[in-house]
Length: 600
Image 1 (spheres, helix red, strand yellow):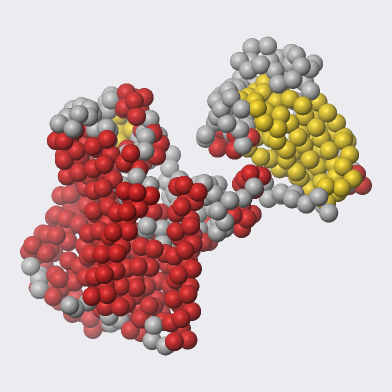
Image 2 (image 1 turned 30 degrees about the horizontal axis):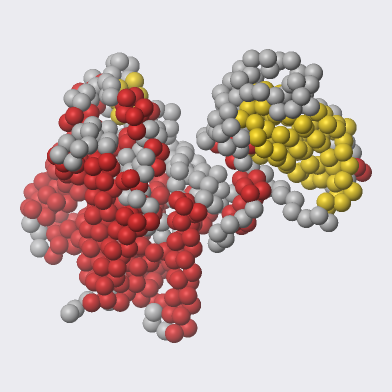
């Protein structure tokens, strides 16, 4: 059997993705915010129930009822009210088109299986989740076929395994597969394969396929229009080849016209939808979100602890190095892949929300792996030619695979990955660990965590809020005594507990307080903050804070503390206070203590 290794690699990868989806983290049977159809996916998907079940594309009137019944987080907010009075979907329709076969299958089976045919019950969740794994398996199959055109069987096998095991493609195919990135990866793999076949033997059917894929990619994410670089430049590695390509275009212009017409036809689905629901041919549905074209967030997007691509998926650094070897080994493949990657990275990180919300690493890069697989395979070829590069390369790949599996676990079951909140101190403290003390979570908010033995501890002040009579309508009882400080939607800030302080008094401040809540606040932007501030006169010299709800569950009473080291700049007092962070959930605070101490 030819190409046996890459076939086995594809079979293993397919089985692994399916096993992760079915047994490790089956989102299709998890309710609420972790359901397969939730958050952004619900926004991509809303077109289908709106058109086929509720017949309500203009008002999407079912969204509140569905949100109340299934709690698919984010769902009421994935459509906004246009000035016409109708509601416009935030996301374009490409994903709905790709979900359609799975949706129709679920809709046909829902009632016979005893489930509501409402678009969100269990059959729909299963269909979208498992259908997305099927899309990934198809994408990897065509990725294998592309790689085998240019590289040895063993290299193709290794490249597939690196993509699946050592990159965040795993998360966005096996677990979060209904996101755009998995589907676009497959579209890119198909596009490259059809491009190769078209140039080998031009035909109208192949040109039509290229055009349909380009249109569907752009309908999914408009910025994917840059995928057109692939069929235009693929195989062009010299001036002579550029001339040949132009001559080819001249000879086959009717086929190119068909491809362009197909692209426009698919893309026009969005224009027709906008015209139907709003009266305008063009609607910018992202409202206040946009691009900073002159100041793209390249450095953060690549290297930040918050969501840096190479920080969380370092294995793709081999793909970037592979452009060097690709230019030497496969010059005709260099121009298309390199220019596409440069433009893709620029566009991805020009987006103002460059960390892309709840993302494991950089989800925005995942679809580009279908193109980056080519320079990655080139680097694998180079590294595998000699023992002194092959063994270290293999060792690094194994380490990166382990780290990727660890990150994936922590993002879903382990709990140590904090989406949108990661920073250097916390990253370094938790990396490759499976459990850490609860206090380590404070590093998500502050870069200071005292873990030694405290010496020369001195109490500076206590405050029990017995004189605070403003909490008379607080729904929570006092923690101790007759009164406790109460914060809610109306009262956002506490009065500061201030203490005179000088550098001679010690090295650290510890503020302690007891907290009680009614309901846990899950939105970290609205979590009550426990703040320590060093002040010199009226100038704030230093400030540190922790978010209380990281440690406080519904109905719980807990004592917490925050430590902050004395700043080097002059200061004359320290202030401790509490802020409800624009949240509306009531919380009471009591028994505040402010101490100074020296570290061991």
